[in-house]
Image 1 (cartoon, rainbow, N blue to C red):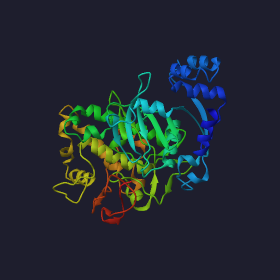
Image 2 (tube, helix red, strand yellow):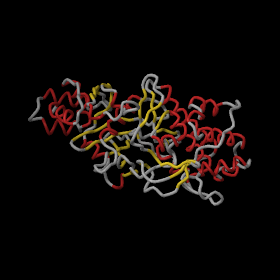
Image 3 (cartoon, rainbow, N blue to C red):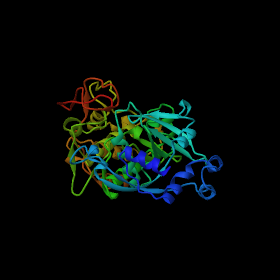
Image 4 (cartoon, one colour):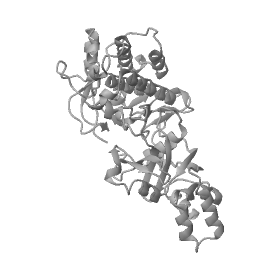
Length: 423
């Protein structure tokens, strides 16, 4: 069995370093050990069955594996995939495909939670009753093996209360699956853009969500041992736990910066319309300030309950950023506050958050604050600069979907650029 797993791993370009005891302790607990022992007792020795029965009591078992990424998975010299870090040790759970199929009722439609650029996501329940979220790479996905491995390696190295936690992975044959903690309240967009559910989020709760997202981004940019650019921060990529605490998810297109690197270029612009900074949408240039721009957009959406990609009666050629800017200039920013918040809030606190959001979406990256500055501004009452006219993308044609790859047309204020089609 061990040789079969090693052969499968090598076929996929993954190198495992496991001796037999490591393998048994990591692999067999995911098989129903009673049935396993009963089924195999004529084939395997009594000692193996006994060992299986003992270790089957362990709910979670970890194995160490080492990944060696070949040159096939190198995309760019700078700002590349996390796989560019050619040898990375991680501790993850290895799930058997049968275990995942059983947990999700064979990937039934009833268990399906949603679908993204990666593929469908299902709810699952393991044999011990633990709930999981199962992210299955679609054969027709615009994303591929690189993004899958990128996400496995990256998120396994990151630990923060405001980042979604990965529990393990599965790769058998053509199946490539990520297993995450299950978050019952799903994504932030299912609240703030829903006429009924948005009322659940008081201003106090929304502010805690804003601060949690900011802290999660700060960890990615400065506080982890890696410097990570998420590149696709949006409402649907922020999940909420039982207590409505936010957790940033979906690291498939994230990038790692090394040493003193502060920015990178790509010819493959991927992300989501309405959240991409102008320098990224137009030039493929990304940095931590690209994530800051996305955060500013998200902050405005949380405050207003409206999508940035919408249009407005008085300013029909603008989006949410442009609409907020016009009201800000006229001293009427309070008008954009979501009415479902109620009345138990300090107007000055929300106005302060609008000001921070406008600073985050400034046209030039150098004019935007860092996430450490954002967290500081959110956490105290110190004065900070007034925003100048922000960058807002004016939509001139409808893209075929949310996430995008470099086609179509738009303008940033009065400057023309190209964007996007669905990925």
